[in-house]
Length: 261
Image 1 (cartoon, rainbow, N blue to C red):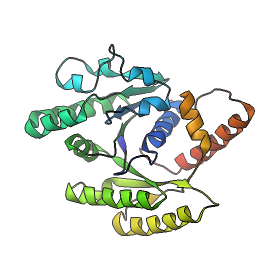
Image 2 (tube, helix red, strand yellow):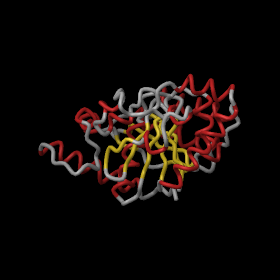
Image 3 (cartoon, one colour):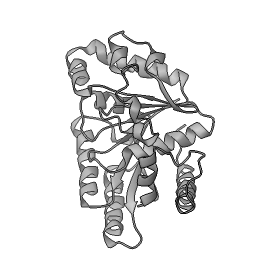
């Protein structure tokens, strides 16, 4: 029963996409999986074509648990078999309460602990910004994945992430995997960025495994536009179907290198 997080102090690096695919992969392996969105935009919902649920008034938010307006099961939104999401409403306001009311921090820790007794894996999807809620959830994480874009801005995000952990006294050993994203064999910049990232990771996160880089693939945006996960059993047009199967194969090979048990 692990708590798994993806984090980076840089937006647009593919955190939500990565954690969405990883969570869905485990769900297809008959694991019961929960993803908590700690991002007010709730981008993870778009990965599964559940955009309509973000502002659905009939669904409860994570914050409702803290005020006693909802129970643990009330906030769960099923998007695939064995896969559930929880959305947030206002994490800045919640973080203020966590800072001012220490009892709220204990309540969140108890909530996460109880969810881990029901689910095989609890995943947390973070925004690039940070607050007290982020700190608590990172501290509770058994495995932290740092997703890094392979360009100069992405490398800056990795460095800012390391600095954030140091400034907030979050244990760097909690970072178990680094995920380079946006690699291209035909472009020089991603190759250089990957070399730099591997060197920085060896210096700052000695306990972390730098995974093989994820290729830059246009099919991912096409799938997201349709609300289709790469692990959905759907048939696309011939060209897209081939790209989807190639991506699925590569991800499965990558995920086999990961141990979050």
